[in-house]
Image (cartoon, rainbow, N blue to C red; front, top):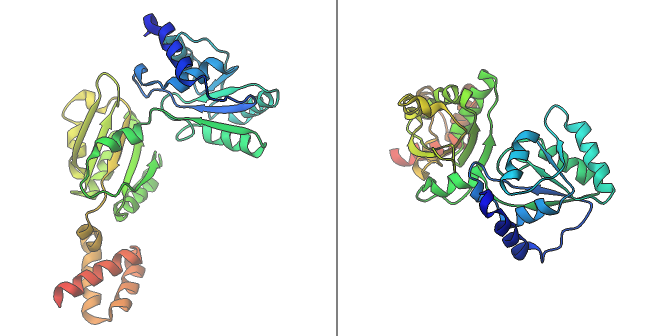
Amino acid sequence: MSASTPSLLQAAREAAAHQHYPQGALYMVATPIGNLADIGLRALQVLSLVDTVACEDTRHTASLLQGYGLHKPLLALHEHNEAEAAQTVLQRLREGQRVAYVSDAGTPGVSDPGARLVAAVNAAGLRSVPVPGASSITALLSVAGHSGWDGRFVFAGFLSSKAAERQREVRELGEDPRACVLLEAPHRIEALAKELATLGARRLTVGRELTKQFEEVAQLAAEDFAAWLQTGAHRTRGEFVLMVHPLAPEEAADGTMDAATSRTLDLLLAELPLKTAVRLCAEITGQPRNALYDAALARRQVSE
């Protein structure tokens, strides 16, 4: 991209220079998630204006800026030094400097220390300015193509690194009728795939290495994801974003319960009033009462 850098920066100035860029403000700048061509013109204009760029990895960010013909002082701000580095950012903002923060890829403040930095800036009464751009989350949602989906989704990000906690989170995810978006790193993707298999036939859209040269998007049943990963060594490499599809209305009404819960509910309904059966089933199984109530109503309607 360097051969066209002067014209690119000129285009950024022509397109975005008319906007006001206050001093003493933190600019949360979205950067590409893999493809350098996905940079926004306003992001380029902001990066050319700021006095400092705070970032997770200075080597990565220096290479990114160089790709656009930019050279800026860099300040490392990551999970190991965020408290100290945030104070440095605050001091520079109070001096009237413009400071940009970028993550290693995509929109900052989602799965990086940026959220705590913004919290510190806000608490100090200073200004934070969003500069939108590439996002693996919305990129995947745009190609998920679930018919009847109303656009609502839950963003779960990275699930717990502890196996028992992660398994609990997957169970809760399976009980939620809404779409859910997950992120995962290559060294943990196989473990996650085994746990997602408990969701059975529920649909997944999997995005691997989105926007990069070997980008891959696949749609399959959750129970087939682990086998899909094993069809080629490359499949376990790269960064992943996954959408667990929403339940169809009839599936949500049935609660997607495991066999033991379903059997318990049926036995209780055969002997007790509906509300009592649901309350006892929730206490016995730990399943959410609302989902059990909907499932019980559906069973009663079928039997009548």
